[in-house]
Image (cartoon, rainbow, N blue to C red):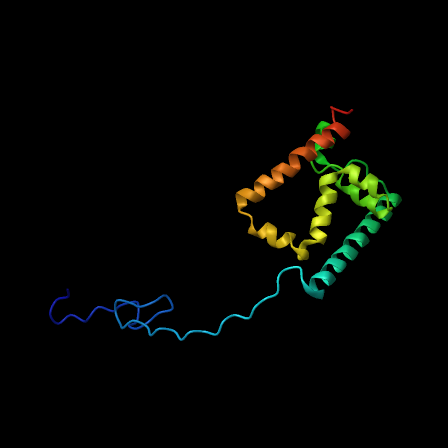
Length: 168
């Protein structure tokens, strides 16, 4: 309440509807007219668009693999993993560069043996438009983390057996 003769209080919100709904200072907004239904979209992975995206991704990955193989042949940098350099223990991603070097030379079996998880991840990323992308986005964060842990733990065991202190 204000004293008699005092100016009326100024409300920071003008009367009437706001983008967030009605205000206590004015009438409720009118109901919006029903909109037209959204156009139907084709299922993921259908049509030539998805196939062309997969071919483009495969070409980019193949080009990168050849480039890495050529660069590696010109100058072998040695061990790139900081964990392995400092401790001698390989990380779960050790062998990822070797995957691309071997694939760039066309030695697919050696690429797969260098790090199977990296080889599988490369295939999944190439095929992403055909469905793995939608499947991945449908997972909860906990599901994604569980899947990544389920891939990285066996990868680390593989690398420990291949390069680390538990060499077979």
